[in-house]
Image (cartoon, rainbow, N blue to C red; front, side, top):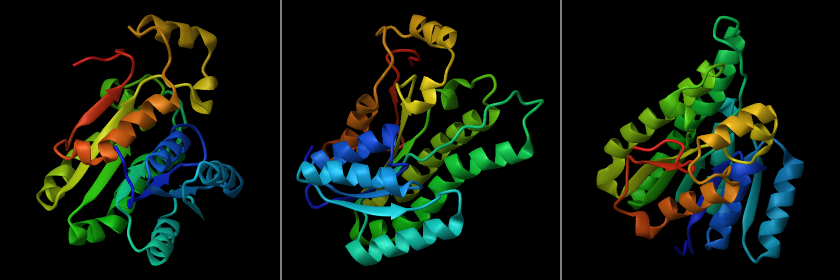
Amino acid sequence: MRLSGRIALVTGASQGIGRACALKLAENGAAVVLAARSQEKLNEVAEQITKQGGKAHIFAVDVGEEEQIKSTFKAALAELGKIDILVNNAGITRDQLVMRMKRSDWDAVLNTDLTSAYLCIQQVIGLMLKQRWGRIINITSIFGQTGQAGQANYASAKAGLIGLTMAIAREVGSRNITCNAVAPGFIETAMTARLPDQLRQEALKNIPLGRLGTPEDVANAVAFLASEEAGYITGHVLSVNGGMLMG
């Protein structure tokens, strides 16, 4: 799954799943544009990539801000000339029961987890159409497939990403551009580390493989979907959940 000569942009690349995706894409030969809010954390990821012989470019951006997205992509394209692979990974949570959920928490999650993906796709799609090659990969969630109590905003955004994935796949498939989604289950990240132990144990009971996933498990799926080998796969949701949800 060599990606030599390809340029990949990963949002939310400073930690967790996004960081693992950036490292894996770089390992497979892509030059990686690292996009996230934390300059310090991005520097750490870039340093690791360069130590391993890869190429990394840093752009600090809050994907919740439309103008920041537009200026970041403009700068990245001016510097690198193209973006072949887009991984929409950035996301936040603002959990609360729906009867108590503030409109601001609904808007923040939908804006960061769903609208940002649409805006990022808009920035690269024209060039991908022109070069007749592209890979768009959206990181959704098992909860976008099943729903989750206390996460009406998050589940809605992640379900929306699945619909967005399929719509884009239909729009651009004729130009050799694929658009797919990866749906992680319970993954060992800073986000899941905050979960109560009881909830973690209940989750493990429902995972046939008997363990939580790792960011690298997700990154391996992303690297495959970014490759030439996945060229006949589009509009697909690849579940990386240890069997927690099947079918």
